[in-house]
Amino acid sequence: MRISALRPMVMGTPWRNLTFVVVETDEGLRGVGEVRMVNHTDALLGYLQEAGRNHILGSDPFKIEDLVQRMFRRDFARASEIMTSAIAVIEMACWDIMGQALGVPIYQLLGGAVRERIPAYANGWYTVERSTEEFHTAARRVSARGYRALKVDPFGAGFYELSRTEKLRSIALIEAVRAAVGPDFEILIEMHGRFNPVTAIEITRELAPFRPGWIEEPVPPENLRALQKVATAVAPLGIPVATGERMHTMYEFRELFELQAADIIQADITHFGGLLATKKLAAWADAYYMLIAPHNVCGPVGTAAALHLAACTPNFKIQEHFNDFADAWVKEAVVGLPEVDPVNGCFPLPNGPGLGVTLNEEFVAAHPREQIFFDLFEENWQRRQARQNTSVDDAPNA
Image (tube, rainbow, N blue to C red; front, side, top):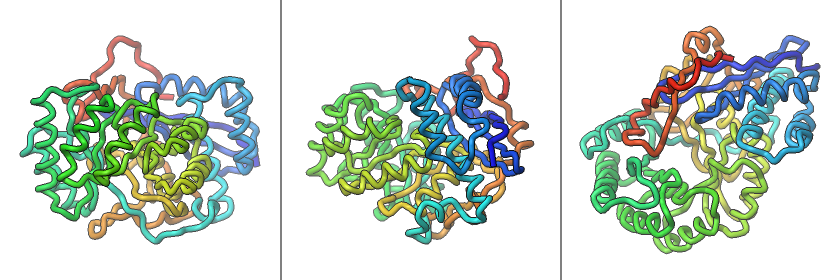
């Protein structure tokens, strides 16, 4: 069996473009991968065009390690988010093909299930005004949907510091969320790398009475010593530190592990080189007694891949999920994706061979790419209505 074609398709939403890549074989099997590239979709498509010629076409989809290593090493370039994301969508599609050919779910090929259900947390639910009333109401909707955990960035457009007024407003928003969901509900605090260490530490201490389940990316990702400073300071509060969505290779995580500067790693399967790379990373993290909670801002194919990893990874904690709240219609891009149980807030294990989902290409084509720029440091970014970018010509869908 050989890879005979790859076809990228971009589906647009008001704040994110989702790139699906269909990998076809000469024996008629098709696999699919997905990645959400923030503001870099053209770069991904360009890389895939070259990598298709240089590495992918003609390859055996069962020889996943060989293909990944060729894509990673043979271009003689340092790995970037673009490279590792392109590797991820092809790797994911190859696992999908292999699972279909063998008639088993991917998680069976990666060691088999270690759990019967997969806990999830909601994101994208607070596309509302930054007021205590609106956040309280929105959080109640998350609880009513069956989730037992949610994530929230209440900090507006903050960067490095917050004014006294903005800090008090942000704390009040978390207080409103806690009042809405009750004491047994997990509230995860997203900081999006906004703060310098002293601000992140101060805010975490202020939020401690509301018992957050973690603080996420409290400082920008480039300086792990700064992250270590935060982790050391908040450890006496019993609040874990999570990070990793903007780390894209094993080598970037090495220093994080050595410094023990976090408690939970959040590599994104679709940016980290795929399922096997993330599985290896989780095993390495386990040697430091760290948990993994994979980042996931994808649509239904990326979510399906995340569920397969969660099913077979012993130190998995909880799975991020956007698609019940932010643009829930994107779930219609596939058939076969499990849903979060409205009683226990968990996904069931995926069914079917491979990823267990089938891409609806007509649906994807009916929602063409948006020319947008999503900026997490712009006022009202939480509404997830990205600014239209009219400074460039319309790009093709694939």
